[in-house]
Amino acid sequence: MIVGLGNPGRQYAHTRHNVGFDVLDRFAKRHGVHIRSRRHRALVGKLVQGDQEILLAKPQTYMNLSGTAVAALAREHNLQPSEIIVVYDDIDLPLGRLRIRAKGSSGGHRGVESIIQKLGSSEFPRIRIGIGRSGDAIDHVLSRFTRQEKAVITPVIEQAADALEIIIAEGLEAAMNIYNRKETNS
Image 1 (spheres, rainbow, N blue to C red):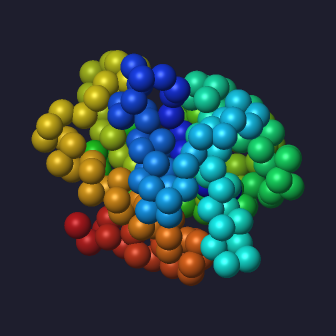
Image 2: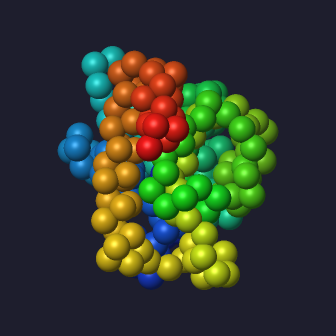
Image 3: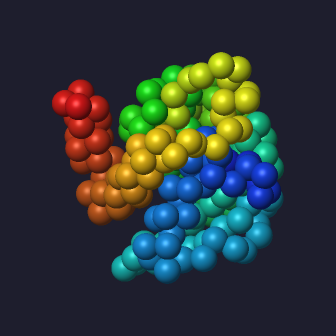
């Protein structure tokens, strides 16, 4: 399962906090998947590649309760935490920085904190997308990108979708070797 984190509703569309939704939408569009079905307080779609079925999910619980939807979907589909990839914004990474990890703490991200709490594990892969930090944290994450910032974040959304492709085809480590290395070389 691939989970993009964000907040439901038009007022939050394309805000910094909804970068996870944007990446998942981009990935789904590439594959002609519509994320529209409602299951366990999430919008879901299914991608079938060969004999592999991948659930794409956008929790509709608001960010801080994302774990409720993720855990219910994981139970329904009998998924282990290691089989769930979570894509989300990270205020502690510079704007446009992409970081892939196999596991870890929430880093203060309340959506990830909720997932860890509801799954009872932090052992799930994640793709973090830097949105930078400016002023009040809540106002910042709920704001939209400026025109200049969009020029930075748009290709990173594309790269994150590319990273998902690599994780599915070649594994997490292959994606980490490509994208985490870019970080140190840039």
